[in-house]
View 1 (tube, helix red, strand yellow):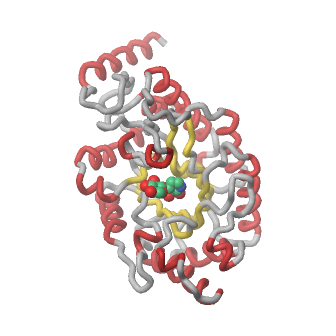
View 2: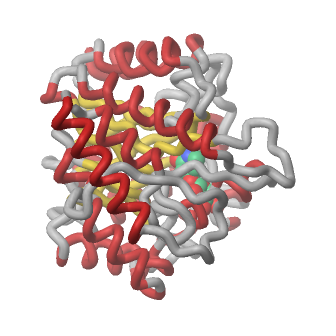
View 3: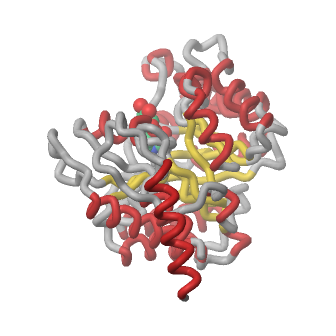
Amino acid sequence: MKRTLAYCLILTLYFYSCSRDDSSTSPPVIPVVTGPDTTLYKMLPFPMGAAVSASLLKTNAKYSDVVKKEFNSITAENAMKFAAVHASESSFNFTDADNIVSFAQANGQRVHGHVLNWHQSLPSWVTNFSGDSTAWENLLKTHIQTVVTHFKGKIVSWDVVNELFEDDGQIRNSIWVQKLGADYIARCFIYAHEADKDALLFYNDYGQEYSAAKRTSIINLVMALKNRGIPIHGIGLQFHTSYNQSDANISAAISTAAATGLKVHISELDVRVNVNKQPAFVFTTTLAEQQAAKYKFIVKTYKAIPASQQYGITTWNVGDADSWIPAWQNAPDFPLPFDGNYFRKPAYAGIIEGAK
Ligand code: XIL
């Protein structure tokens, strides 16, 4: 106990002395209690991932250094989405996605593919497409199989279908459901599997921590698919969550997903602190600690599920300045484990604490 306290003190002093750059945009100065040689994935018993931006990887050396050093799994934040790779009907463009995959390969990192089917990020040629159901089916199949085939052997797992459900547990009336009926989801998994028999296939969705109805619908869906012999191997819990989300809800989402026996990926983790969306929000030390506690709880709870089901935890980008949350909620926020200058926040220490 004494030794642990002494260790923490030394590390705290170390970080006070050398870890801050006062030009940081995210106030205040926050101590981080982890050592200089610590890196996230080395400290965790499961893969630790980040969603990455293709342009930041290319242009920002600090960013690419942190991604390389701290993570052993990579998801493309946007570069593999429909609109990014298949912007016009007759051509695919994998430039950004390929760059991300090359980066990961060069650094020995796993690549998780995101995403083959979603109601968002669709180019206008799809939303305006006027074919009959056979033509729609062909569009769906061609897209999925071209993308999966392109990355075969390089991408080990895919979010096959994203966000099929509304928060009340009803199936979303997406363009795919309208054109092809709700069971098109089963065919998405079949098409992906045909293109790469080795790829692990996930159903991915948000809100599983705050909506019991949604959670139930998702579990019913994946169990039905599994029982029909449809190739589905995992559930992605996005976990775009907040520091004041209840521990009971977080636990319920993780344990419900784990009860299916499938792999569980916390696939898009970020923990918001500006829950009232204040325009002039100040990120206080107290909030930073509460955020760290939530990260810790998430990791601790996740670590308690069977090891064979721990596909990993992926944060949705790296530093606070890279997060999609401020644009999404139209208010500042600081939801990630690194600050705007890629210094480790208490949230970072929370992740490591949770794995102890
Ligand atoms: C978000 C990206 O982070 C943004 O940059 C983009 O503008 C919109 O999409 N659920 C998902 C992710 O599955 O693909 C979304 O990513 C966030 C919500």
